[in-house]
Amino acid sequence: QVQLVESGGGLVQAGGSLRLSCTTSGSIFSINVMNWYRQPPGKRREFVAWITRGGSTSYVDSVEGRFTISRDNGENTVYLQMNSLKPEDTAVYYCAAAPVGNTITTWGQGTQVTVSA
Image (cartoon, rainbow, N blue to C red; front, side, top):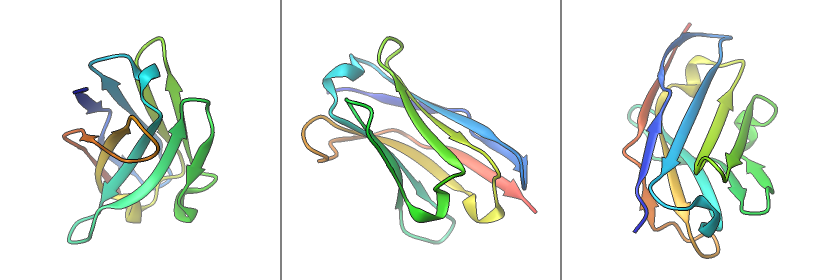
């Protein structure tokens, strides 16, 4: 089973940017959909964005136009570029792999993103 390792989280002021990375232990090309989720403090985990093997993308409305998901099959890595960050983006961010359809089978350990006002 593929393993996922996220990195790139940290503390940033509102309006700033961060780029999260999620590297897979195996070939990312074999994974149909890669997802990013987040869990804000005291709340449930929520969907942020996904990208298919073919490069199609989808975003939750609250990040549309500010976040960009991309994948580099050669580097076995998925990225989440986050711009114009807001305090409400504060959360633990997780990447998740869906080898078939969009049925998630593997989660990363998460990376903390904190946006100060």
